[in-house]
Structure formats: structure tokens, C-alpha cells
Figure 1 (cartoon, one colour):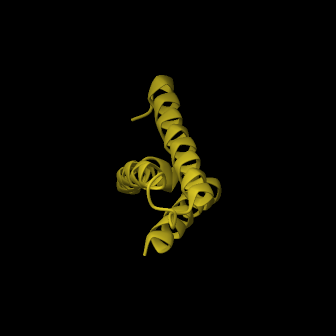
Figure 2: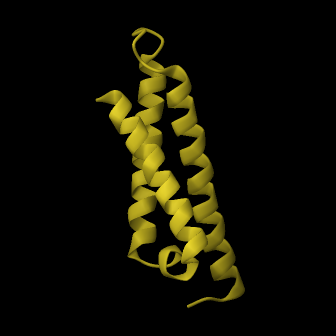
Length: 92
């Protein structure tokens, strides 16, 4: 179950990146943006929890957890940066 959640988080990140590069206007500034941001924040919290638990429980996957944590932080940062630039330029 833990591995499935981590791989699901990687899939959501890849889906966001793919949707951003193929149809950036539709995905960047819509309700999907909020949904993705909430998923990224939840995945970051889950990865931090798994990282904390990996000290005591050896069956937690350390490198997979670190991959999910760094990928989610980078993708959430990209989402926030694009929104900042959009509103700085004077969108909406």
C-alpha cells in the first residue's frame, strides 16, 4: 500500500508536467490547478511521514520516498512560480 501511494504520487506529478507542457493555458489557471496543488501538498506530507517512519521501520523505501518528496516540492514550486508570473504580468 505504501509503495502504491508513492508510485501514484509520481504518476500525478508526471501527469501534471505532461498536461502543463501540452496544454498549459487550460491546466495552469483553472480548478485543476487547485486540485493538483492540494495533491502535491498531501503527497509532501505523506512523504515526510514515510521518511520519518523509515528510521524505525526497515520496510519503508527510503529512495522512493526521497524521490517523491523532491519531485513534489519541485512541481509545487513550479506551480507557484507560474502563478506568480501570471499575476505579475497582469493576468485576469
